[in-house]
Length: 204
Image (spheres, rainbow, N blue to C red):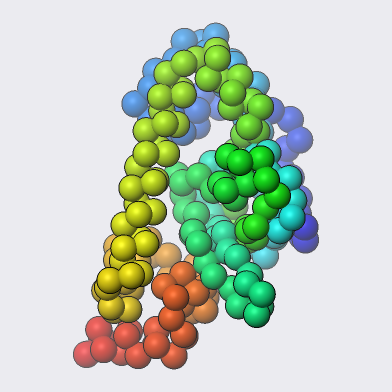
């Protein structure tokens, strides 16, 4: 991992507003907030940091408070395939490895200086046991994410590159100022030249 640094090596302290922001639509008692604060760790990463590389053990997922990240896979030919962009109020990890306890197949790169809240798999299970409605919260998020994932697969199979690009900018508004053209092209499964051509067509 390169250019990595932490703003804090301690657990989250008295950040009630952030806890409420992470768990929207849920209310907590003071004791429950203390439990949640005890398992989240606030970390800060510089632009360019790679916080996960392939063949690593994945025990952590991240809530993005500020910044922009991406997860991507490098195939046998050395080509990058961007799987997800992570923006404010989103979660990111190598979920294949996280859920299956297998080694990572993704890289996660910080594209814009980021403030994250880190949650381990063990601590997540602890929250489920202590505050069961948090398990419901994560289940609903996972269901929505799976639905979005299926839509993206269908989009790549059946839609034109231009339509995929329009869907992309609708999903990630204003992200183009944070990422490079080849990041977007690798997410859409097209070349940077095709991306430039699509933008010109839309501008005209």
